[in-house]
Image (tube, rainbow, N blue to C red; front, side):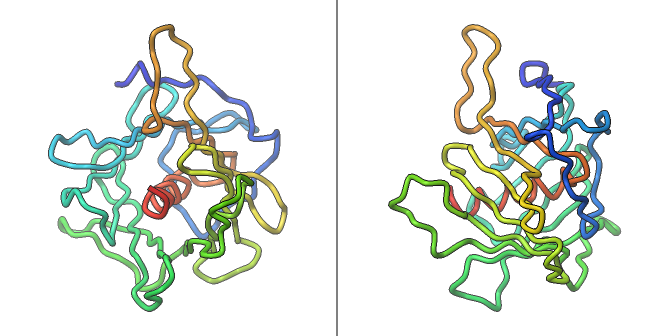
Length: 222
């Protein structure tokens, strides 16, 4: 569907095996060979003319995920959909903590044309308010916790989203499970700006959750 955005990389992130994410069960991307990463191309653009959003494409150039924001503003709610427009994950800003940029990620289900949301999030993500803005070092951008606040399923996000250079690290094992990277240019005369980048996901980590975290980084740091 999008041959110009194909990506053929299959290497692992630092050659590490990523821990699984039992809290999130949304998996719609095609399976990769054992030990290989899934590399998705993220395009910060909706396919609908009247919307802002994201389009996510696999290594074959096929549409995998989409996000369409009809309001064309910074919303307090986002929905990650599959290629057919079915809701997968709903992302909402938490209302209880007004001074903290904190969001909940819910597993969404479409019923009779409406998106049903469980009472409890399966993941939380919170912006690091103590980030050193004046430093060039790769500081912690955000913290990610499972809905049950299990310390075995906690992550930190480090790097620079503006430069599209981030790592999502599993804290207990200190292992990188996801990387956000600038897209490589392999064709002469073709250049990608910061709105097109690669999302490299290690085996065992859910690609839907990885994309949800990208959406929240975009809310927090764009």
